[in-house]
Image 1 (cartoon, rainbow, N blue to C red):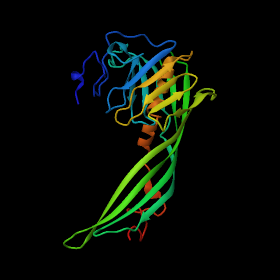
Image 2: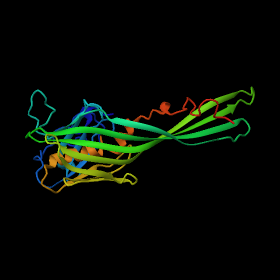
Image 3: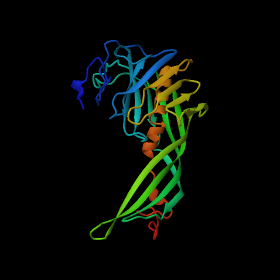
Image 4: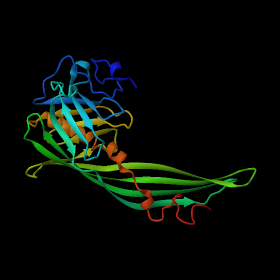
Length: 300
């Protein structure tokens, strides 16, 4: 991984795996006003910071910086949307914060378990496999607060609800030693998590009034989409190399707020991060043991 000094100053995080804050671009673009198109791309697959480009990705279009602090889905985590005006001598790498998002709580997962199927019973010379598939449904609720920092005054809450299911396929095999005749047990697990639905509700933090609500689209496709009255956003899905998030703002809402909202919907409150934080507790499954077959079962 290249260190900070190895990163080209004019390219910021482009093609870089740097963990450091991107350098100030040669041309500082003024803060966004009115209709805007943002291109949001991760600085590195090893951290949670993002650079924002104006209209399209390019070294001359570097516009803003999304600075993540703390672990995702933690009440100590926050994301600051910064420009590249860095005039604070005490924090020389910190730009002016336009908007900030802070998580109100750790996610609340409700995990309910249900056995899907089981099968076993075929054998051959020296090899007896057994298989069981478990399935559990889950729900998630969590919140975050977004507030205007540079100009103050505005503050909103975003409530997120998601649901889906997880599966675990357990296979127990007995491999018999040809010389001694003793059998050795081998247990393998295949885990998968699925998100079926994610919905978002934006509220005025002071009055509690609902401002807007919307759902993610494209969960079964390669492109994820978000659309509400304030913005539209899209993102090519992918675990290791997801595409950039494209955010379009056409209305009168502060585009910096729209950008931050779209960003947390497509990252921290998106399907990949939700699945990463799920951690199904299969040991709570009724009858589950280390083999996943319950007492006295699992072989023919």
